[in-house]
Image (cartoon, rainbow, N blue to C red; front, side, top):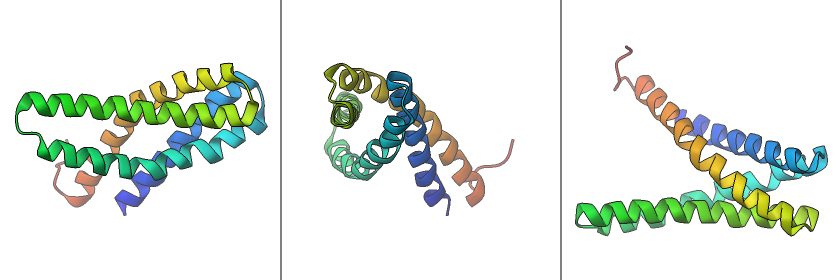
Length: 136
């Protein structure tokens, strides 16, 4: 139950970020709405595949240093994935390389900064609901 709510919340968080960036850049509710529908959904659909691939790499890492390199690579890869998707959606919507480039820079930064906070909140909630974490 909590896992489904967390995934739904991730979609809405992505949607809010995508809308805010598209609307701020274009001033258009249409482009903001387009960003809400397409960009976050693509990211949320692709992210589990991305996580699965990087989990396999983490499990093969033997030393602590290798694990740090893999985690760093995962974060860079995740940011690159967001950048490509954000650029593609904004460029397709506007035909502007400048808007595509701005979205490619802003959207991943916002997601990489905000989603770990989001996920930590939901992980703590899941532990509380399951009774594995005492209420302070």
